[in-house]
Length: 506
Image 1 (cartoon, rainbow, N blue to C red):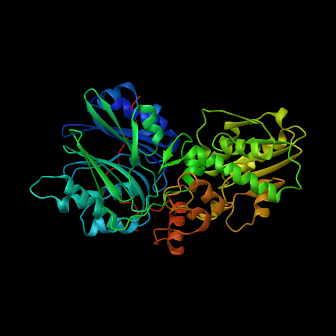
Image 2 (cartoon, rainbow, N blue to C red):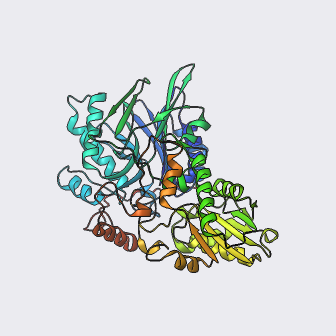
Image 3 (cartoon, helix red, strand yellow):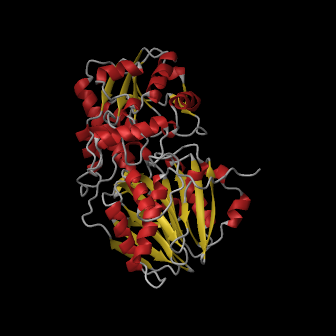
């Protein structure tokens, strides 16, 4: 999961891109990068860490130009420790292209081999985003005549990307001397929206992973980039769009609404906040059916993503709602931290239980989901340590039993607490006295109620149905081996020709 931005402005783009990445920081805390364009020249700065740590005043001054793209990284393919894999990526042929990507290619290994053997292109890192960039570059090169590029050639190249690439991808890219390109995979798995601002100097455009970036930067949401669609905005601000996929369909990732996206975002016409309110109502209905025998004194949310669901649940059940955990807001999202030990430690650093809300009470803890179980286990222990008599646990999402291969860090079945366990076994694993999960059908209805026009969602982490049709047990075994052993995209080992030393100087 990553956050991406693309901006065509009438004034310097650097500060707007920086501010936009700050509000998308929840989508990636591992690395950040910005590239601006001035005429035919790109200016790039990127590195490991949070946005505020990567960019200093001297870096911002060097990012000149009125057009640019930005990226906050959360690694799902490649290495979390590699500074070289910070995005955006750059390739010099043809024209010069920079690209930022949110999602995950499921056929990255195959494409990597094709790029080397057939396209005569080299991929320097283990990132599937660099693979995607080189595929786009090759398709542009194939369709370019007389060293000139027009919107038709760009859209033809995106069509070539759709034919070759499998998986999930929302992309922003810049072509030196021409403009900004943005496109989305034919299934529309990962979100991408765009907006405009009519200024005194002319029209400005912003493309982003979530609408919250548009809101904070003063842009009006126009619409989502449609699945398979590409948009192109040239240096003069002329806007072009075209459907580039043969048979697109809209299947947004439902886990965006459960956890990943900010509640104040609207994606694919669906308000994240409204979906979470609906989740609370349907979860309350299930509790009414299945937990009548339990005496619940108080409902306590796990801050912050579960708060709307928990509040709506408490109101529907007529129970007291209390903030039993105080959150340290200077600790990052534990879900996207690499390593179980780090996540376990960070849960204790991030949350602290107030004993006055737990002592002697039967408490119902409400969380958005249970993935690895690390956070849930630690939180149950904190509630018990604070004096709770009974600790019941409710998940606003169904059990996560299958890997998510489309850009969320759930690649191995061994990490998922629900894989191979029933609800009672999971309850014992996290140490709760009772556990209730949301039903998948109910979750889909909760999201569909906000935008009934969307009839299908990407739900593979709950039901194991992979909509791209290319995810087999053998494929899952390969990516699990890569995860556990750190294998690269190339079967021959590391393909690195250039070791990019991006450690910043003091």
